[in-house]
Image 1 (cartoon, rainbow, N blue to C red):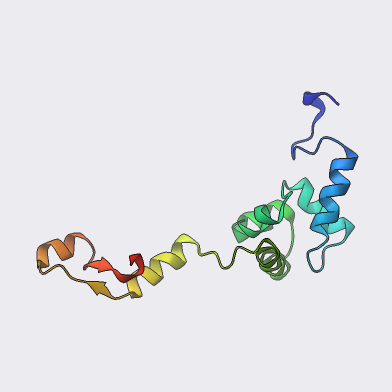
Image 2: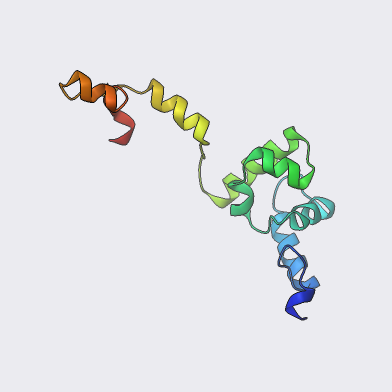
Amino acid sequence: MQEDEQNITGVKSNIDRELIASQLKELKGIGDAGANKLIDAGYLTMLAIASAPIGDFIDRTGFAKSAAEKIISNARTLAQIGNLENCEEMLILEKESPKLTTGSEEFNNLIGGGYSTRLL
């Protein structure tokens, strides 16, 4: 198959597609149709699904929010990557975390109240 005939997802043949689909069907609730949706949207690995922002995942796949959350959660378990935090979650945790102060009120103000204990 020539390079210009390759589809947008990078899957070059039906054999590639079947292999990828069989791996994606390890996700709870994903059958042939769901695997094809994921492949067509460009999600070819568990890691790609596990690290996908929920909004992008929903937009690209057309899955409902509740189904998308379950799929991503299951992919994170299967990919063994643990819990990912988005930037908003990290900012909230950063603001709530205790700070180590420097002894200089002006410097503490410059660095957001002190050194974050989350960095330790």
